[in-house]
Length: 135
Image 1 (cartoon, rainbow, N blue to C red):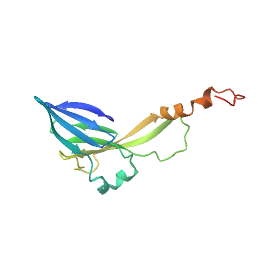
Image 2: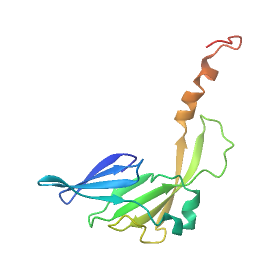
Image 3: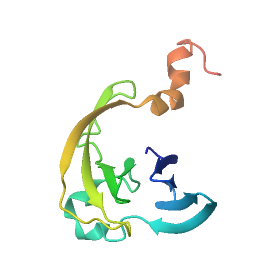
Image 4: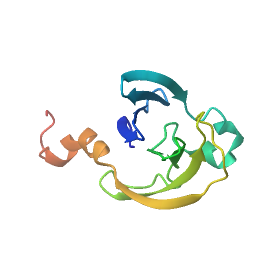
């Protein structure tokens, strides 16, 4: 799951809300809300996550109704141009059925992103003529 998304596992629909850091679990037959799981309430117990962005970057529901959560760390260097690729590290932890982290870090990945959103903020710089003071 990435940001706000849906997954179906074993006749349950899991709706992840990244802004509120929660998962709403619904049964499919009949369609009804079963529970809401608040995620990573015990995050402060994991020092490696202090440098991570507040939201969970990737969330996967496992067949046993537990979760695999990926936390993206802030890049070490902020000395890059908006159109360059930026290296991030993503740490993955298992979460139990109640949404708390239940293990030490199980794996990490290096991820490369191009910060396209920043390009849009600076697009006037690229398309403005050098003598054009109005855009």
